[in-house]
Image (cartoon, rainbow, N blue to C red; front, side, top):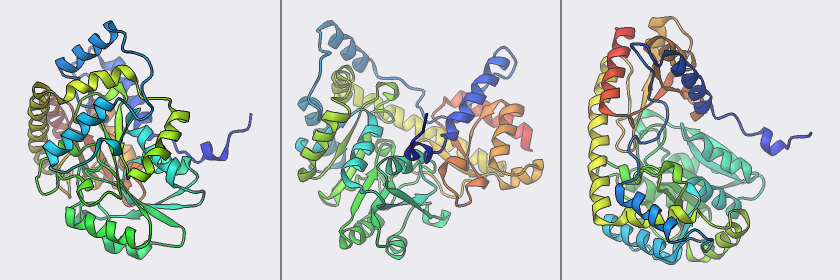
Length: 394
């Protein structure tokens, strides 16, 4: 059987490969004094709030499980629109919002709608690996631009201008970012978008961690700039609905019908059950709980990052959102006599029983020196992980 060249270009998702190894070891040490602590997967330990769960149960009882429009329930699009108005003080008409089967489907649809074979999309290095693979799936080419800690691992307008070439179609940014947890300053984003507009290109911004911003100067949506921004968002992270596979995108009015046509053919519609449940995300009781949980994520960051720095696992750019720490493990590797972050991740897994993610997935710009810690786990687990890491490294 011949495998397509398109499929062969997609690299393994090493995060998941490490997760499989960690899970196997976890079964072996489950009854030991040091069961596995998972700090490798970006999944909140919180689940959907009670009102969301109740709404799903009611939808099942009421038989609200049939197809919805390809763009999603109008009532949900209206709720999302209101959330932008209440949270960010920006007007995003419901007509520009398309509900999708997770942020992944939104990125897939955007790339299918906008990228021609051979088009190049600029991205920061490091960045989330699946984003570049969505570009590849549309037969485009992701161009990774090395970004440094002093720029918070984000692109600048000057970089975008300098690397823009004849095949460049646009940029795909993330704010806050996975793996760094850093956001793009609004002024920098405005300048990048202006460069892109000058070239007639597209600005795609992955904002799935936007609700989990901890710094007001960064916690603003790119949609405040103008209606030519394409924003991708999700119910997975801030709204704690990872397995429900529900997200949305905001696109210019002229693009809605194109996205709808693609969605009708590729997806039919997002999960009806998840959509009815997600309506309850925007009830005051649920929003209050989300804000309480956001503060808990901030408290975890504020505890964990100083502990990493004290152990020589330096986090060179303070994350202002999400739940990640992008830590330089070079000193630890030298101390342990191992080569790079891939070996370090397995050393930590096997000796400390803490699962973390090596930098290999996230690009090529010094990523062999970095590991990603997820602080989405409980404070108790973070404290235990610190004790184990300290015993191993100090």
